[in-house]
Amino acid sequence: MSPLHPSDDRAPNQVDVARLAGVSTQTVSRVMSGQQNVRPETARRVLAAVDELGYRVHAAAASLASGRTRILGLIVVSTDRYSTAALSVGIEQAAAANRYTVTTAAVSDHASDQAFIDAFDRLERQGAEGVILSVPVELGSAAMRLRTARTPSTRTERATLDPEAPLIVDQGSITRLAVEHLLDLGHKTVWHVSGDPLWLETSQRQQAWEQVLTEHGITPPPVIPGDWTPESGYRAGRTIAAIPEATAVFVSSDEMAFGLIRALHEAGRSVPDEISVVSVDDIALAAFASPALTTVRQPFEAMGRAAALRLITQLEGRATEDEIPDVTPELIVRTSAAPPRA
Image 1 (cartoon, helix red, strand yellow):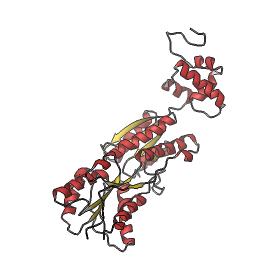
Image 2 (tube, helix red, strand yellow):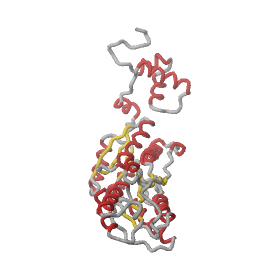
Image 3 (cartoon, helix red, strand yellow):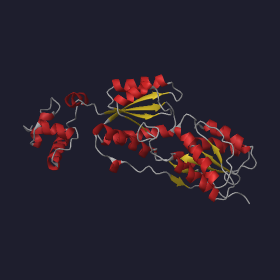
Image 4 (cartoon, helix red, strand yellow):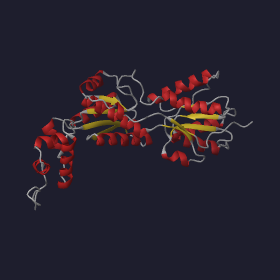
């Protein structure tokens, strides 16, 4: 056994890394905590020694030494929606790339303000330095404002908690891509199946849908309500099937579109020959629907990474704008939309 390597009966420690790399233990600590005031060549030597020895930082010990936990909290709605899982993946990716871990608290989508406060408190007790909110309500209570004032926080759909702050993804652009595609195909109007009214995206898309139709001199037809689930899409599809003049519909999520298309098929209304459908999200199953869904892609993983990086910016006081991924929506044209019959 080399004198620069520990004996087989104990795990390597920071002293062993420092000895092998020929640096001080303070330098090892700075490299392992991600500090920037270390020369690149020195950092490479330290990391090479870490790999050679198989050294691993003990999270609790690192927290005690630095006064930081490097934990991000995440509050999500308890649901099986694809978007929640994909956002979480993006948050985890950005956290890991910046040497953070993520701890999650789930609440009901119709939870009270107190449930969100309890979730926030739970994350703080677990050591979260900052909290990402992926929830449908505005959280305007005094108790929640007190918590977000003392613990850095952001939301997945906005750059900050400020309701006037810009959306991370422009819901107006999403809607315009969908509705104008249907109008460009020659449809005289576009019906709309909305999402859950608790979510900001629902009102943003409905307002944009009305605006686009109005710009084209079209009076918007009545909104058909949904709640993001395939079941609500199925109910909306039964309503659309009973409207003879309906030839095009903008559905606020792919999962609702699946239910809507099934209801149309059961009613004998062909998609896209009789009714064209464009939706939002571009989840993995969209390309394999029958017919394949034309949809506006929301880059959920990129949105999650953007939210995490913006929170890390707050925590570390360093600019990360160059690292923020592109979250521009994109129309994915498939076969669920076509020109109306002559």
